[in-house]
Image 1 (cartoon, rainbow, N blue to C red):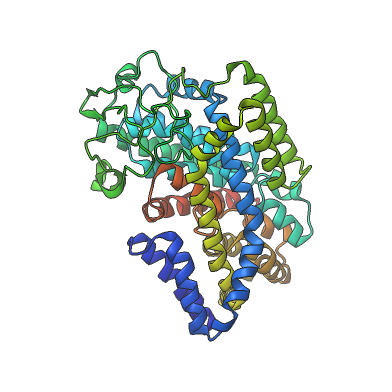
Image 2: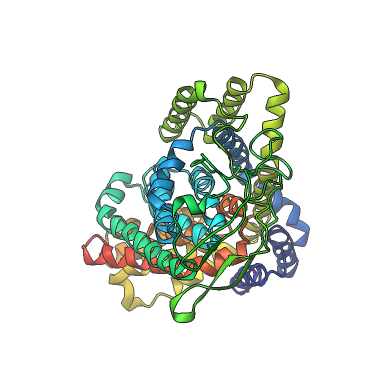
Amino acid sequence: MLTILGFAMIATFLVLIMMKKMSPIAALVLIPALFCVFVGKGAELGDYVIDGVSTLAPTAAMLMFAIVYFGVMIDVGLFDPIVRAILRFCKADPMRIVVGTALLAAIVSLDGDGSTTFMITVSAMYPLYKRLKMSLVVMTGVAAMANGVMNTLPWGGPTARAATALKVDATDIFVPMIPALAVGLLAVIVLSYVLGLRERRRLGTLSLDEALVGEPESETVLVGAGAGAGAGAGAGASAGSGSGSASGSGGRVGSGSGSNSGPGAGSVSGKADAGSGGAQEAAVEDDGSDDDFQGLDPNRPTLRPKLYWFNALLTVALLTAMIMEMLPIPVLFLLGAALALTVNFPHIPDQKARIAAHADNVLNVSGMVFAAAVFTGVLTGTGMVDHMANWLVDTIPDGMGPQMGLVTGLLSLPLTYFMSNDGFYFGVLPVLAEAGQAHGVSTLEIARASIVGQPLHMSSPLVPAVYVLVGMAKVEFGDHTRFVVKWAVLTSLVILAAGILFGII
């Protein structure tokens, strides 16, 4: 019964958010609470929620201060050179922009933190997508898949969990998997190329000057990361930098508004023609205005050019300390945010303005994390997760025993999507490893197969970082889910196939 209720709860949640019948926060709270009553453990709901909140509180703290830290770094111009380089590469060509999104997300993912990756990637690429009227779910989907592949780095989390759970060396898991993971990353780049060609056919190609018309003498355009309503990344400064429009090859570019609008003006709908084959993907709805496009010009008042190298070294030191695990990640970002605010904005009113500018995104993301704590708390506390995992393991035919590497790889897709990495790697993986050993399959093969589902896992509703991604991109979580699941599954299967082909799994 718990197995059926567990799958029913997850299915109900996904259906409601994809059909936009409930917001993710409401669904994450109300659906598990209702099913907790169905299970007959409504009296214990409070304990389950507190346990879930206690587990995810460090993650929420990390996201809160990471958003403030990287928001400040964007405000002061640390990432302006990266954006200029991306603009030169993309040249307002939709195909290049999508490929550039995949490459940027993959590069930034080297730090091992999904939230950091999504904040930098969206901040750099959002203005181009918005100005060219490109599908924002293409951006979120490509970024999530690229980060999912790179998330298998030993310091990224899943590989370390697998190594810990099975008592093997993380290097022995990751290094042999490099060829298969490289094929997976190549698959993401090829997919981004195909999706980019669809966008090019739908929109046409513009020159960089045409795309940025209305923003003279400005190559650097960033979206204010987490800027609250009425507050751009410049303290009280107008977010827009003029207005105008341009067109080329049938592509229409929206006007850049000089208004100081906050996020949320743009909506997302699944009705734009995605290109050949008649496929439909979610795209930004053209409401005739570009009010939520926030371009930051090179003369914005928050720039701190004299402190550029200090900010760069501080960021490198922060990421190095994070990779080397010198301190817990929430503590590192807390210290980093405090130091960045104090040095870049020594006056208290300026510090308050920066915090206020990013408060909207901080509240949305942290609220989503604590709502997810209700979902995970009920799923774990009621025993649904254990029953679902045991049911899946028990359904494996005896004849599949010698193919436990393949079985583990296939099971990693749904299990890491519907469960946390901790639940899968510490709860299910040891059982799969024991079953594999009984049929002569090595523990290392099982461990390697267990990480192939990460491209799909990064878009799981139980991953806090995905809410940073869709929140900053102003994309509905349901739209993102509908778009990315099929492509993420394909990418994961490519990695699994490559691992089997190369004899790694």
